[in-house]
Length: 342
Picture 1 (cartoon, one colour):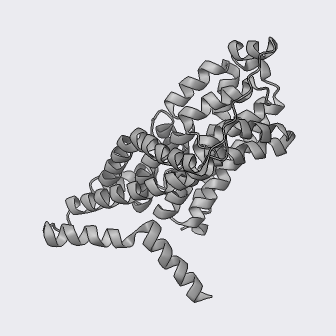
Picture 2: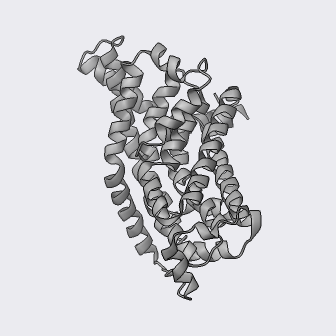
């Protein structure tokens, strides 16, 4: 049994954590560039070079695999699956489909509009809307590569719980009248949209996956570089004592502060991962770090602006409040039981 465990740990270190890459980067900086191993410059540059290379390698491979699998989940197929369920089961299915469909926060909102126009229950579409940018297959594996599988799987579970509870709560509040008039009018006049179904050959799926790699890399590369740069500063330059005084366990408001910092930011989850890694290495609680990541991913400013254009104020405030409360609860609970994950 221990042999099997050691095998998988070794495989994880080789393919996901890429410890060999960290060793090579450190060797290059020490032996070729002759940097001081105890200096701030070495710590920051080692973190920056290693994370940049690792993230882009993993990202390209994982996006290709995930996009190929996700090509089977078209918007129309997703709509048909969601329309077959009702109640809490429908919210759960909506949240689960949000994790496997190829929609980031910028594209999930137009899909949300399409689902609403197609007549799906509002609560179900919100479960989808919350989980779609918050949890996806590539980000889960990236989380495992930086932290561990316990944290990655726990992130998936809490993301789904927030999505299910959020959508179910909205469905029970009967807020269908809070959808923007232009969406309601299209259904009231009998012109609810039917989403177009697309079928692909294997060759087309490969081409789609390659195109997704190019598209997503073009969209997120700058945020990854900025995120890794911030992570490198946190890791090597900013004093650990200062970070812990603001976001450490001794500050009872650390989760609130992390959430408030994350809400107005605009970054993909892949850009937040290096920052999260550096914060954990600095001693910040895992719950505080997850709260920051979730706030950035689920409540980015551009997404909030787009959502506000398709729903009225009461529904908008309800949605944001539910997600923020969920994130805060997750943050404090994970900090309390962090010994389970680290």
